[in-house]
Image 1: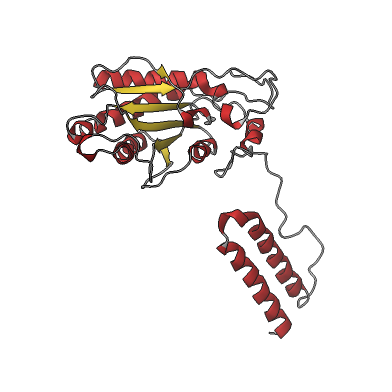
Image 2: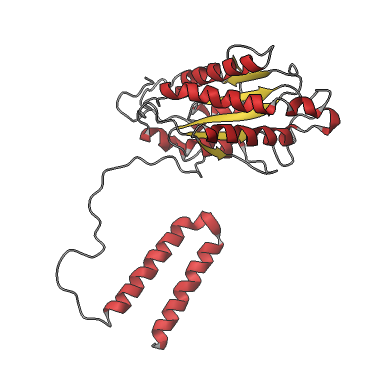
Length: 302
């Protein structure tokens, strides 16, 4: 092989490896490098082969129907503003993903109680069982964390905002709640924007979904009330941070209290909480439909 060609290939390889090493931050640059590498190799190959007969290019792709993409998993407060313009009605029965968020994590231990109980650790136990119950019902489950890490509030919301056909459930253990009960929360109503066609700011992403969140919360709370005496029968309102920035039906489930006498008191609730959440989401599925968001025909919640 001529030395000049070998040199070009080594240079291209070095450039690609450099961008791969730098990680996701340089995905666009990596793609450009790959395309450039393919083009350069194609030119070198063409110079050593006979021209092909005229006709349609071998790499021509037939026209396809347009598909609206989801907001990227790496969505940030700066990029989510464009996502609502891609909103549309989702057909009934399209709910198939549950984004499950075990609260806290890492150096954020959450509420702490007797016997060294730490909220950040206990919610992982509940989340694992909730996941099994949901998957048994045919749902795909996306976790915001599975180990002892602590994604930011925006990272947790972005994970949900990247999905189509999803709901968001964040799990908490109360610091002073009534032991043996479970409570569901949604955010307070968020007033609509004055301009119905304006893009939705990141910190108001839950606005168009509050009604759906109330429906989901009521159904899950009713299931919890069947299993845990003393639990409310309807959803409650609280300014839960990660719900406000979630562009999907979203609820927070707060379980018992870290002040229980024994850790076993919490462990006994795990199966019932998992089954209640799964059954509540199953009941919500037939009525699931996404609102029309700003920038789309109608521009309002159905």
